[in-house]
Every structure is written in C-alpha cells, then in structure tokens.
Image (cartoon, rainbow, N blue to C red):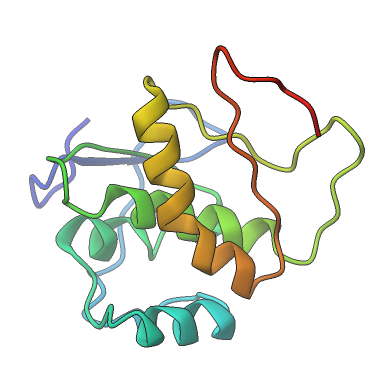
Length: 141
C-alpha cells in the first residue's frame, strides 16, 4: 500500500489488516500534534522545531494506534516518527516484572544503541525507563 502522497508511508487500521484509511494532512509543526507537553518541551529544548516529512506524515495517525509502515533513508527521522507515539502511549503506565510495555526490534546492536540514545530524552521527560538488550549481553535487570 502506498500513501497518496507517495512518501513511502502506508496506513492501515489495526482491526483490519491491509485496509487503508484516509490520512490527516501532514503536520507542519510538532505543536499541532497530539504529543504530551513534556515531549513538546523536550523537542523545543533540543532544537527540533519542524517535523521531517516522515514525521509529519505518521505522527497525526500514530497516537490513534493505527498500523503504519514507513521507510526512509538514514537520518530521515524514522526513530522519532515511530518512537514518540510509542512513548506517549506508554506514559503514565507501569510495567509488570518481566513484561515490558513496549518493544522495539532492530537488526543491529549499533541501531539498538542509536534508537535508545535518540529516544532517551523523551522517555526521561515522560518518566519512562528504557533498556537496551542485544545478543551477547547479560539480560540482567
């Protein structure tokens, strides 16, 4: 499925795999999105003012729990496009022991560390804890 604007984004309903749904107009600023105040403040503090195209296309639908598939080059903003809604949806919730609230799977150790570093300031602002677990490391606490 291709997004109507051919940005490499496909949208679908979680209840109906493969179905497409109309998308909202891309966001021009982060302030117009349904992100927690703490996340907006952290974006501003880090100098992130305007969403990248993949963020503008995905962030309006992601908080609703829609299934979204996006692809982009390195540095295109994918981590925040998918990570910020995940953090926002888990904010204020408490995980049970050995039952994380969310899991992000990536193919390499380096990418796992990059994703953790990119999302850490936003997770901290929302009082969420993150852990990076990769092959060859002690799973520990």
